[in-house]
Length: 405
Image (cartoon, rainbow, N blue to C red; front, side, top):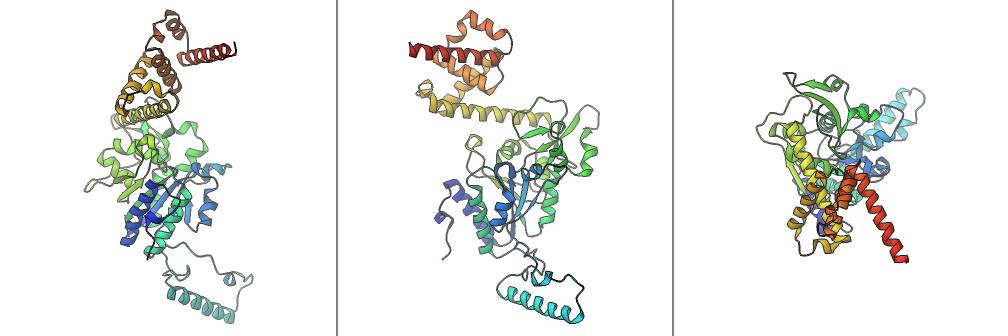
């Protein structure tokens, strides 16, 4: 009897559910499953994939001397097809041109090896026949399990699912095509690592992009009012996909999905956790050219990042200063964070650290911290975040001195 996903040891509840979902797709036998892994989250990813017997290829190309750019980029892993077998050592030992008798003997030997492989259930004949057919479900399941064990619960993999016509070369070209996307050139900065400017990336932008994308890196919207910049899009990061996917129009979703029918991913808890699925809309034409995000999309992503940062602050306060959130449920705690964040912004604070410090001081003082005219004046005297941090440091030092005394 086949082992079920629930019986797999070493996987969290979420990843066991993930395993069960992917096993169900594999058992159907009519869909191809690919994984895109975020190399920056895994040390030595290519060697680890090789050790697990998983066929893989980088989605960044070598564009300079730094191989770390390719290693830390996204990697495509094929799960539904048998990996190509290494060339037989006997077939590779001929340094000189073989004669007719040697060729006949080699052909006979290779034919026998191929027939034996086919008889044992290997439709690729040991790598000598085209291996573009979906492999047997039990083999696909084995590869899925090996990959999830390698991931170790890290939010560093996105699964792309398509019908049997979605060949590896097709999904490879598509994913290369969304390594970079277009953002409005004149826009507010998007914090974090979801989207980053090409001008600051050098070799990364070159490794991620296609030559024919260069001409459209700065693009007009037809009327000359909007200009765009090509930036690297970290589509192998589930947290990034969670930020971007819900903000897209149906046409943009179709462009993102390309030949795939659906994607599965599991972002970190602050981005909702659990298993998420995105599906390609039916009867919708994909946006032409590079995937292009609008100002409204950027604003929506920014709002989602703010919500995630508030969730992080709630989690930290629950651990380090639970008395400040006493008797508050999660909804009330998020409102508490948002209210103090708005106050902090009004006094010139801009950073996550500043918001945390402000919230702590205001909560601990029951709102009296900012009533001091000296403190208000001090915050106005320059970089508010740096000045608040200095105040926190001085107060901590004073508290230590008081304990010593």
